[in-house]
Amino acid sequence: MSVLVKVCGLQEKNHVDDAVEAGAGALGFVFAESPRQVTPALARTISEHVPTHVKRVAVMLHPGNDEWLAVLEQFAPDVLQTDSRDFDGLEVPETVERWPVYREGKSVPDTDATYVYEGPKSGNGETVDWSVAAELARRGNMVLAGGLKPDNVARAIRTVRPFGVDASSGLESAPGRKDSHLITEFISAARTAEKTL
Image 1 (spheres, rainbow, N blue to C red):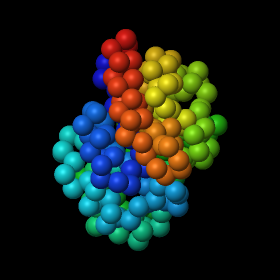
Image 2 (image 1 turned 45 degrees about the horizontal axis):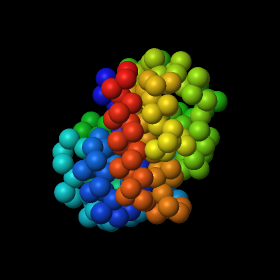
Image 3 (image 1 turned 90 degrees about the vertical axis):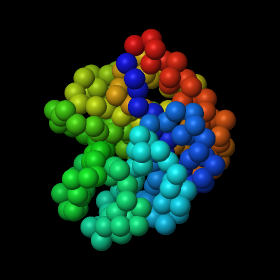
Image 4 (image 1 turned 180 degrees about the horizontal axis):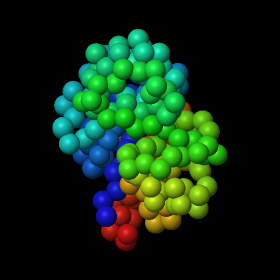
């Protein structure tokens, strides 16, 4: 079983390149207020040489439609990731995948689609209850997020058996500052763990 690995909160080209080289399947660029926030123009610039098989994900939180359309026009992401209820007010073309975020403690619908499951607040490094996540991971394609890092991602994969894993703060030397070594270690640990599934 192959596990999708997403590295989120990227702000620098060298870290984008490191993630791609290490085997990431998706890269997240944060447009919500955060230490990891980037502009659509910067996201486009640092990801312009990303191969087409790696998904470029626009990570947002309660965006207005105009805000989203500006990201769509300037960055042209492959995927929009935002809270599930946000999609109702957004014009998302068929060419862009939707990854709704469902948060721990809230209901997750029966679905065949890809979705992100994480704690109450994004980017805080809060680990969700993996036993609950394991039950939910039987529906659709769960991308497990929240508190994942190189030293626990293998256990998370074996316990939850998610479609994908997503890390941000666990790959940083300081808030918002990615660490190339941690990115490589995280992806390597995930790739090793997937072979045991």
